[in-house]
Image 1 (tube, rainbow, N blue to C red):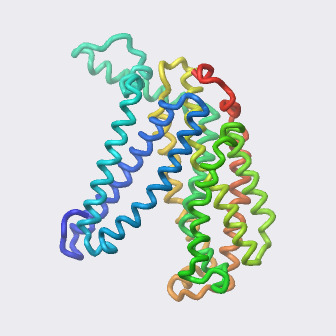
Image 2 (image 1 turned 90 degrees about the horizontal axis):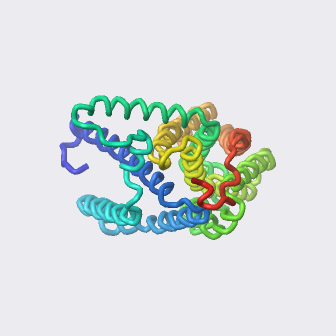
Image 3 (image 1 turned 120 degrees about the vertical axis):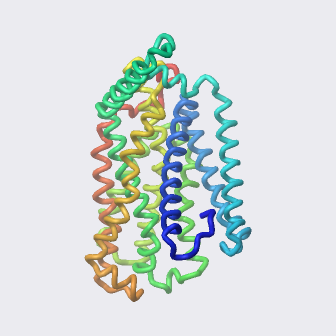
Length: 371
């Protein structure tokens, strides 16, 4: 919000909506670009796991920007300091992207575009409309080929469910903790509560970073399948549990199976891109197109999951809790059932969907065999 509009004006609302629209659009575009860059620059399975590990390390390091921004802006009292911080971070990110891209000059957009169109020579000026028509037809043809692949359908369906689980977990973990865990165990503002939330958010990433060799040895597919099995079994075993200490254990297990498995989808999608290029004799993989299609399908899960959770909880008097902050026994039962049934149902569904994925042994292939 760069312009100091008067409070309550229509321009202020339009500015907010436009800002959120641009943020969400460019955030998705950057995510697609990063995913495509990940796939294009890491053909070796070991290198892909290593790149995933370092990306998780960078995410852990980026958490510090919250404390830095809080200090510089004095809790947003000096809003201009917050704005300047975002600009500096944006330029640092741009510089890193440019430097990273310079390491692989053989993989620009022109190569991918050429592989998509398979043109032998550039068209003349008079042939530009025909060229654009061929380009559009080729794009739709490639899109149909990608969606016709059973592996891609398995990936996007499983990834959609996984994203919904991840968003629901992040948005409602604090509510579940507040209602299901007594204050005598995890008091508000206590170090124990902070450590618990730290384990839920940072623990899965640290666990993934420390187990790079396991991912290299067994492959992303088997790690994902193991996480689905653990999710299903944990929901089944803890379904009738009411003891708060066991609920804490369940929430930690559920957090690990959800958040530590999510980064593995970049490896899975990259393996599919290599296989798609091999099957259709493309000059290079259609990484940006595949990641764009994945984002197109998976992105709505971020909006659907919270709405669906709130809709379910409203049947257990969740709105009354929002206004009174006094949870009813009915709401506690509803949250506990929702908390346990989510990994039980969705984890089992992910297992059966992803079981059809055929590229499960890509991690043991040599790089030249992937091409």
